[in-house]
Amino acid sequence: MRKFFKRLGWGLLLFLVVLAAVGLWKREQLMRLMAVNSLFSEDRIVHNFSHMDQLFLSAPMDGGTPSALPLGDDAPMPDGFDTWLAERSVTGLVVLHDGQIVHEQYRLGTAQDDPRISWSVAKSALSLLLGTLVADGTIPDLDAPVTQYAPALRGSAYDGATIRNVLRMSSGVAFNEDYLDFWSDINRMGRVLALGGSMDGFAAGQTARRPAAPGSDWHYVSIDTHVIGMVIRGATGRSIPDLLSERIFQPLGLDRDPYYVTDGEGVAFVLGGLNLTTRDYARIGQMVLQEGAWQGQQIVPADWIAESTAPGPHQAEFGTGYGYQWWLPPDARPGEAWARGVYGQNIWIDRTRGVVIAVNSADRLFEEPPVMPQNVAMFRAIAETVSPPTN
Image (cartoon, rainbow, N blue to C red; front, side, top):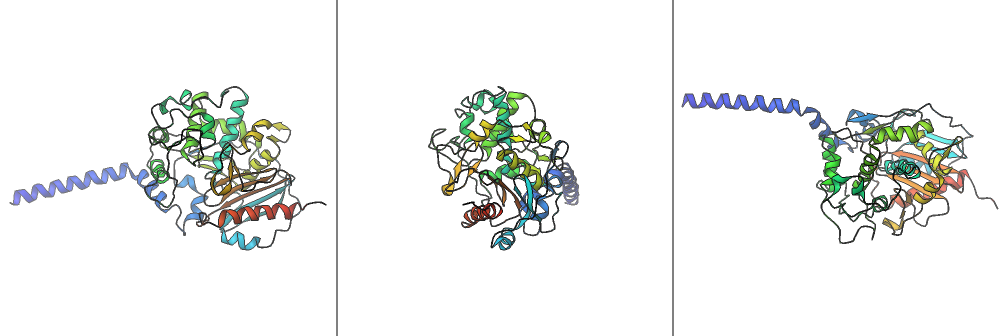
């Protein structure tokens, strides 16, 4: 009996040693998984959203030499503005009028130089990059199947979908985007990212199709944007950070070098992992307002800007429109376009009034029903106050 317990003791010790070794081996993955589980906690969300490179794998990018972003006279803000800032937990806000900063604030302990997570605003940035590749003939046909450039998707739910389908969120792939459901597809994807898994593998592993055929209706599927990234990488043989730096960010001249969150294979998390300062999000908006031009250089073709920010054939959620990874607000007015991300990330563009509004937030109530229309109303009120109508 004594020999049995002695063996049991040695076995238990060996098990604990192996367990400790596995723990050390997987320490980084486990730390990232813990970061995912507490990413949106009330006491951490503001800090986390400005320090994503401390929580996840990341890839640095070259933002070029900072370009001029002139300061104009400080403009008054509309009634209810301060209350809206507080209720929406805004951390950074930049308002441009005719290319000049007319209002700027940094809140909740954050600063001008902080990089801030884009979430789905990154989708609109990727669309700009794609536009340059369409223009130079690298990807000449949006109606080509995605499998032409991303053969790993053959046999998946994406087989049969075109590039245009995924651009418009009409891939026909089933996907649960509920952030509050632990087992939703979007949260499973987050755990793959945290544990250093492969986003390409996750996309190729999607097998569920909706009843509708590709292109027949609209359904928001975040992994669609990753598929666009796979198409771009397949067509060019290059990484998204390198291409986006070279074609968009260096010509823009950002205030601070940006970075992408990446998966375990170093592949950029293109559907939501871009990190820029609020001023640099405003630069993107101003370039789009100027039909893809920036300080004398045509960075993105004007016809791509027009096409990508026009609503597609299917209405999106809550009366919104959706183009090529760009939103149109409900009852969109001429000249309006919108890049929109969860937890209150926004680039609002009003070409008619010459106004760009870049907003970063840590808004844990962003999914509440009144929030989206309240945001739209505030953006329009800011634009009208900064650039009042002329009779």
